Length: 315
DNA sequence: CTAGACGGTATACTTTATCG
DNA sequence: CGATAAAGTATACCGTCTAG
Image 1 (cartoon, rainbow, N blue to C red):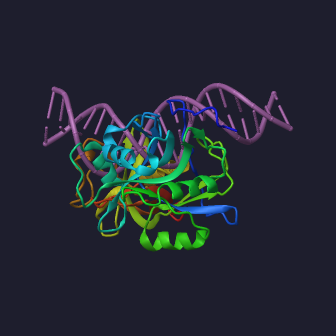
Image 2: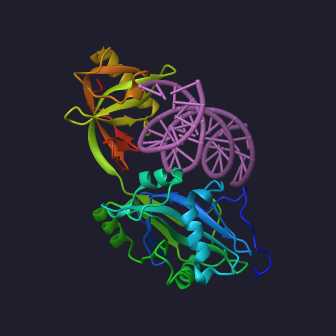
Image 3: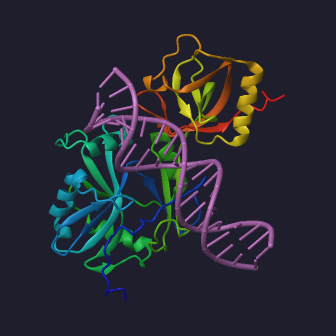
């Protein structure tokens, strides 16, 4: 068996990465889990018991997540074991009752003691090594069950994410509660690095909305992003993802045909960092379809993506 | 007060590798 | 050989922190 070689995490290691998908895979061979919106974190304990934490790119981040290190170190079930865990560091939004990406980013940079209201949690979804044994060849199902056994009565800071059989039901829950999405994993899959597999898929929920493109930012002589406004004229961010050459051509022809302004329309309130940008404003805003992960606290779209430009504007 | 860096996320484009 | 796949590069954005 793989008894002999306890591996060590190192710079060359690439954590298994889920592949983006549009729909949840169907069938008995799949397990479905909540997608926790936070920072990927692997934990490794050496024989001495020292715990180190690493990001997705295998950069050491132990000090940034001291509370997790302490919780792992103090967990009785882990005592004296050489192990490697894979999971996500998250912070729950106490009001919305779901993980908050802005909060975990904030927490990561703050050395100050944790507040009681929103501690960092370590949501564990995989175990690659346990008591010196390499478990990566085990079926995911078995690795997950082992996690449940190990952490059955641990502190609230450490939790094992559930695995569900009914993917559709989970998706319905995700939509109702506005979580980030679902990760689906083959029960029988072993742990393979990066995306060299067809076993883990992520399906992300997104907002779909109509907005107005009021103009575009030119960078290096090229349309870099679109200024987005709500129907009521309030600025809601910029979009660049999803823009293709076709779109750029359409936009510049629209600008040439419909005309542009030097100044933004009316008394538009813009973030100060845009003052230096080279912005071309349309005389007539274009309705566009946009998707995004969510609204940020500042009222702009997080990770907006251009879905469609109206074809009607084309001659 | 501003500019830039950072760490995190993502996609698009370009180059390289691989395969029939 | 050409076509496709993989890999690498570049750029986008958010929210903070740091330097000037």
